[in-house]
Length: 148
Ligand SMILES: [Zn+2]
Image 1 (cartoon, protein in one colour):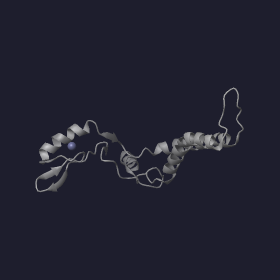
Image 2 (image 1 turned 180 degrees about the vertical axis):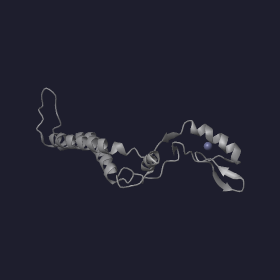
Image 3 (image 1 turned 60 degrees about the vertical axis):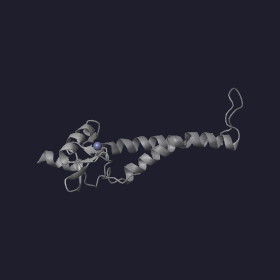
Image 4 (image 1 turned 90 degrees about the vertical axis):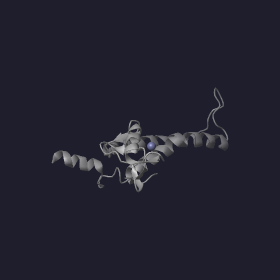
């Protein structure tokens, strides 16, 4: 899980595209790839990257509550499903269910991503400072700018 606040190099904030890095006297490097050259050439080169770069306005804190509801629902749904797989005496007919402990654990491992991914989503929403209500991010400052 990546720490919040720092965007991937291919993601830039809407209206705030980063420029080429200065790596020496009259020598710049593209922020998206390893191309090196003079500033004017790299600005034109950068524009080709910007067409495919992901732009977002930052924050998206509104997703926190729906994501917590969704992940909690899916994760708690998996508890009785996994208990059923582990402890239910499956019939042999008409379709044979898992009978041995090895077959039951194989089925549990097949279902495990449906538990693990929502738990990771829930932990991200609860612990990440990007989505916590107390942190100050770009989204909050954008709202502040609109009201002023
Ligand atoms: Zn490039």
